[in-house]
Image (cartoon, rainbow, N blue to C red):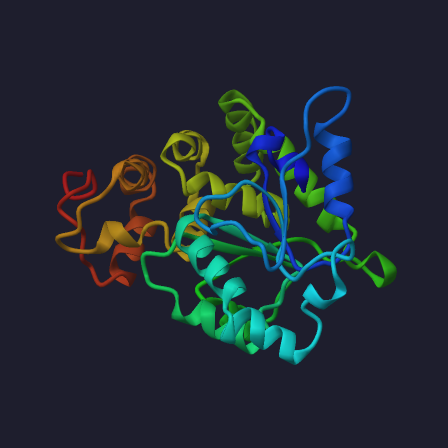
Length: 287
């Protein structure tokens, strides 16, 4: 996970674990042969949630006074309710930063209600989940947290793909745009069911204006029309009066070029499924 960050100064990691494995791994990753590991913070002496870098042990650490660890219901109530320092830290962090949850279920009542109470302008939150069922997906959606899937194995290998998925992300973050273009081209070259890792990568690519153009330049055929529509990427194109941003305009041009002109019956059927309405702020209306 630490390799998701370019340097020790970029690390921004919060854990509810009590062990110091992250600190030891950070020292190994960033401090040898030169340099310094990231800063570390232990509860209850937490930094401001909207302006910190380093490793935060939210519920305390085994190296500190045992009385400061968050272990019991009373400890939890003190951290999140009566004294509230953990709640204030998380609330300000969620409001400022995009957050990825790894191995965290949000089953604690206070955390659950905190997630539900965050304002609409809060930044994006994501969770890594292995093949969730419909009920789990509905719960994450209710919390306003987007699911990122990874493949589940069998038996003792059930979560074996999780470390490799995170490592792959680290490699992809460091890719130049040329590498991203090649990766997207490889994925869309085959119009077939995607594995969870490729599916998540493509969804990530379509969320950014700089990379969506790689998809629209290479995705051919009605499979990709259906794939994009099922994930809601084309919805703004069919909202009368909507003003499209640059990313959405690229998708509108792709729809017009690849489908309105070449696959007219499929394109027309899609428009009809969306109520036969098209925003005037797109190339579709002019095609």
